[in-house]
Amino acid sequence: MPTEKLNHSESQELEPVDTLTPYLAQYSLGEKIRRLRLRKSMGLVELGRHTGLSAAMLSKLENNHVVPTLQTLSRIALVFSVGLDHFFSDPDKHHAISITRSKDRIDFDENLEGKDVVYRFQCLDYPATDRKSSSYLALFIASRKEDVIQHSHEGFEFIYVLSGTLGLKVEGEEVILEAADTAYFNGSLPHGYRRIGEPECKAIVVTVP
Image (cartoon, rainbow, N blue to C red; front, side, top):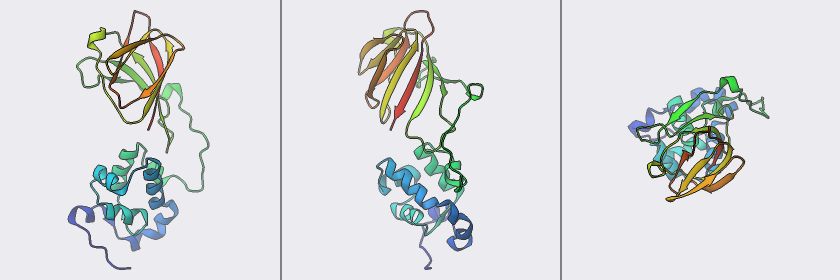
């Protein structure tokens, strides 16, 4: 096989294909990278902007012409919100279901780059690899309507209110959601949340790329 010409930064990210291929071939790393990219409808150039690798080098990775280091795989994993275990899971073992136990979930505070906490959340599906959506249990904090911090993200968002009253502001307009109400909207639109009243306000939030 001819020697690939790499720039200095890319050469530090790769291992010689002849020494590792026999062991790593069983994991189909290139195929898994390509599958993640295509599911996001992402081109090689766009993935290159996120990872710092050239489109040509990413093509070599996908076609198993070169073997990525853990650092390279970590960069790719971060882009697609998967863990490294996505690439190295047992190829002979298929996990039909992922379970998240209540006792294992961790509370996180989110301030949306403001000084005060806007809501607290738990990830409901973090053990699942190659997931097509992300699910959260959110506990919202009370605030004034004019103080709601708005943010945006790629994809779409679905909210199911479990308890309390939620003020959902989308593009500057607030709608009021009560328990069992739902909302679905484009996440790229500026949006924010607040608890209205004293009762606890909880909701299931699902984001879809």
